[in-house]
Image: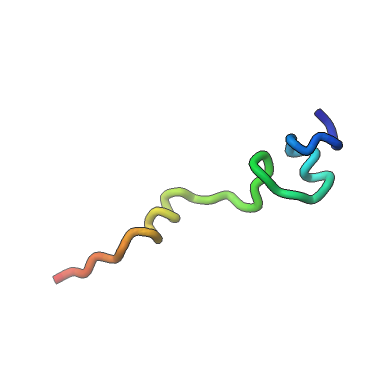
Length: 43
């Protein structure tokens, strides 16, 4: 489990790649769900 191991975060940082152990950005699930919901019109 070191720099050469592509399944670890340290290995991904070493190569400059992204994946499950090192995602490109954190996804805020609540904010993402709010964007997907259709807008309700107020009457």
